[in-house]
Image 1 (cartoon, rainbow, N blue to C red):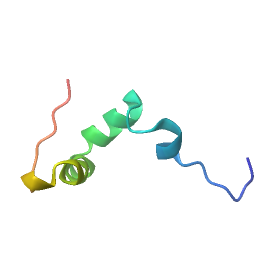
Image 2 (cartoon, rainbow, N blue to C red; image 1 turned 180 degrees about the vertical axis):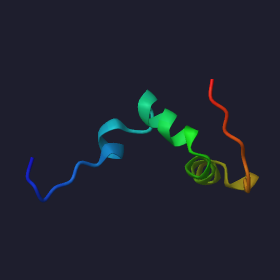
Image 3 (tube, rainbow, N blue to C red; image 1 turned 90 degrees about the vertical axis):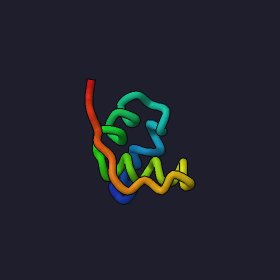
Length: 52
């Protein structure tokens, strides 16, 4: 890999990868932004993230 090209983790792993999904869903702000993109009709303003 050339030094000029940076690794894009999202492209390599994809959202369906367990690690990627876990990292998106554990951060409240990123999770809220993702859910608003997927479910715009809900217009989520605030949410609480709980881990297992």
